[in-house]
Length: 158
Image (cartoon, rainbow, N blue to C red):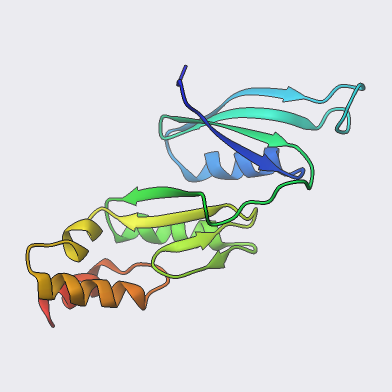
């Protein structure tokens, strides 16, 4: 059991969200599902809490009602090895009502914020060439989905 787990509050879409997230990440699974009984407070049979794992990290999702909403103060960061991974997660997470934001940030259709980040980003915006790092940073600030080749070109000054 993971000692610290991220807890996600949904109105009533916890099961849909978990099924969606576990379909996107290869090393993912649902660990446990607890449903509301006739005693409530949610509709009998609806998921109350669902524990799941994404890439070895445990999460809990709750159907808690409309009392709390996600905001950008918390986001999940996906470190991507290449542009194909960036594209995969970006396109799937903004599908069906998600929203693009700046610098690799987005909100999925459930309102949860994500950062889709190529592993190469740190070496480009914090690289040993200060002018190159500044160019890469300026290029990143103009992007929604991060484009590794464009960031590399900016770093190299081409």
